[in-house]
Image (tube, rainbow, N blue to C red; front, side):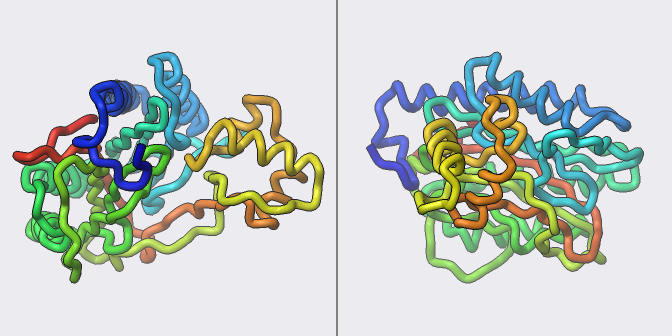
Length: 306
């Protein structure tokens, strides 16, 4: 069974159904969270409700629920004991991943509490709809990125140049090809049977249009087996590898399982057994909107799984 960049044409019906089930769950949770998120709400409550709903519906979170606010574009999830809340008049990106036996669906939406940014939010959604309409076997990633960029710029906004869509594989959220949301030079083409997450990130026209790493990291994943210093670190690493494989996780999850050990966790990071995902922030501090669907590329175009 292939892992990286799996082609659904090579998979049996049972595996296709797992992708479809993951997509159905992700879609329902995304739509539910749109009505759940309110100004003043604790971010940790949003994360935990989304993740618990995924579990109740028969899936598993493929990564911690991301709740990225205003200039934060991606990768914020609540750490244990998070006291932060949704600010008034904010733009809130909710990014949800679901897997069924490692087959992943990735989807996102933006909840806008500030009417001044409604056009920008709608532009991200329009760019996503355009990409879904034109993606097909044989199209190059450069042509796709150029078309996404044109939609965004024609409406007076700017794409984030260094955040991309991505091919999806089993237990791999980023597998193989990337889908930039801007024009670029590439001869890589989309092939029938591939699965992609398409996610245009949009910001204001006066923004730099790129993200930088913030000084926080609350999402992690297993990287490789090494020799950490502490015996407790080895036990924790075995737990992480067994339960999450190569998928991202949060410290909240370790606390939920009753295995969180601060010293051991720090040891694993310092030993480079784990990879930390920094929060991504728009370089000029401008607000960012995002929409995302996972699609299966069929012979005649795309089938939206989420």
